[in-house]
Length: 536
Image (cartoon, rainbow, N blue to C red; front, side, top):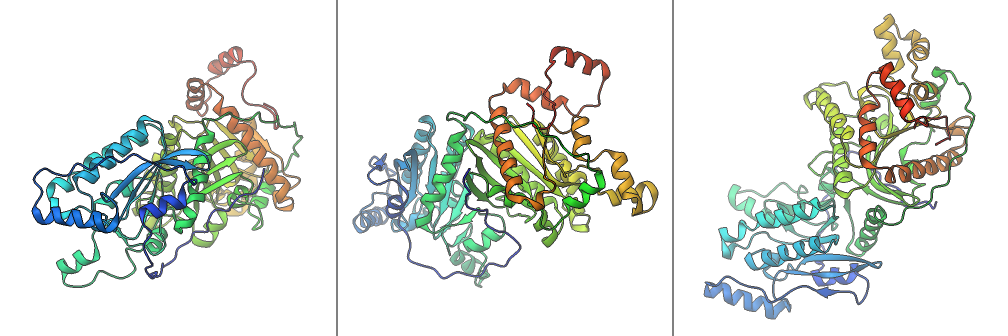
């Protein structure tokens, strides 16, 4: 496997205002993104309202002559690195990219055609919003536009959006905000209420720096800020990952049987806390492709939870990764992290991709903000959503696995564990304080609770243990290479497994053991899924 681009670092930051630049037109963007010579227009002459006001008719005529475009929206198809894709792009030079009934009809027709032909869709609005010359009949077009995109997403087809300067009003509040992956042009003005309207209504300027792409990215509303010239590479990586689900799966090499040392639980706990232990970001460097995503898309983010699209060898997935280093730097996982995780679960379900969750946390936040933000409810909703996801799920316990923060990402079809990973109701010191009123018996309690990888394997919580020789921090490259191979092997196996059996087994694996049920299951399936490390 070759190394790929690392996920972009994300932490709390105040985004500065960025100077505006010359606008990139829709036709120029199409030239930058698509393979040369592959563009095919879908446009037919626009059908304008029959009772056009004379002044409005003159504006349309002048806009056509000035821009060479016949409406504010251009639609068609082309190829990105050979993959067929539908494209919708706004032309701001045509009446400020505003959306009237003719533009909306063209847009909806293109979305419906992309859905019918099974094409991914790249949409790039740049718009002042609804066309005021057409009044209410124009603004209600947000409804059929949103409905068409919802149907496209429901068909399991990727919808990618690239917001250019400016994107405001109804364009942002419909097709601009519904992308599976959303990027924006550097310095772009992006907001529902245009600053000129705000100033007219309130008698003062809109606060500076708020409606700027970089600020919205810092707030978890955008996945990336990308130059127009870089959009092609990002779109190509997304399509490569998503398309891999429906292409020929590789033959994964069987993993060797390994003998694991009988390491005490407390030793594993101490090793899992080493500052130089490789985490989820280091793991993703061993993926064949990575597209980092950011935040909930609804105004929240948490640096302790990484979200990405990735491909390990030929096996694609959505990654939810608890980032222990970021948690140490910025604080424990809060409710926002779990809402980011739920966005990832929904992405996996809509794009029909396996979900890979990576557990590595000393525990969720214990704070006033976490309680008022609904931490317990966020954990419950993660558990309920993950255990019922229709797509294959794989969990990796990479290091620390303490409490509800770890449990929220655990319920999966298959669970892997690094040799020194562990899973406990609380950090062992906290559990010792509850049980014995002192943290001094943490090592003893860790042993009694059976939190280490070999105990989890014995108890059926874990299906495979990946060896550390003797510790991942001492052999990071070799350890991560083994781990990446194990992930590809497990993901390919899950993708080939019948969905009905997979879902039934997932729901049953954590139920309290019934000796009669276990005996019947063993008789029916003598080669059970649980196995020694390295076996299948």
